[in-house]
Image 1 (cartoon, helix red, strand yellow):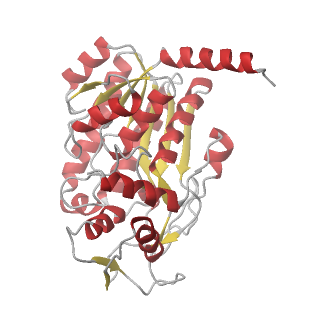
Image 2 (cartoon, one colour):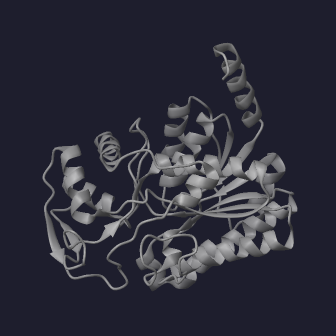
Length: 351
């Protein structure tokens, strides 16, 4: 065991080592990306953000600076812009990339699949090519539980059936396969593929949280809109599933827990070559009605809802087997659903 002085010296040493590492975060102003950046800076890393703000706001950068007390380097660019990316890599000595940029609406991907393949897949190809050109061969990729599709039974493990049911999920899987092929061709590459489940919550400061442009893609922003009066009621799709209350069950993970998983993945890349695939989830399922009730308690507001028919492609139960992340990364989700709702409400009240 380290004495207090030794422990302090050790902490300073670790902070000094990580401070030398500049991490490029694509989509770093988005809901997940901004929380990753906050945790990176808190851990002593330097951050460079690339975001075109198609589903985020530039004010997030100022909010991050307020949270961290540090100036944020950011570029308003699309990752498909090869020249812009090359200038960024030429300007900064990038140690590794955390790749969060991409479109993420399942419904939109069904309506316009080419848009998703152009943005999510082609954009990732351009990014990877630029990384290769500049000798940056460490990447953490934001994948999704959508790659498992609707046929695999819960809990989903990394060896569960892969069968995405929509172009969004397919775009995530295609990028996974591209990165696997790149790492197979060049053993110097180090790749972490993190499959997210359902991130909710907000930073405990209340300064950053989920703030989608247009129609929300996730349940909690819909609930928030009912609480704030933007909508009169919430539609709950399906109340006849074989679950405890008939509504769908999902694995809701606090976004800060999700962010810390990326720090652990970067540490894994420091020590290992090859590819790691890991779920980031709690390993527990929460029903739609349970989430509504929890947010109602956190906010002190009644949430009106109405049942509607099931949506095509929705599964009854989806939650993670997070044992690989626990065993390999030493990571576990620490925050409860009550904490996630309380943090989301704190964020919402400050808007």
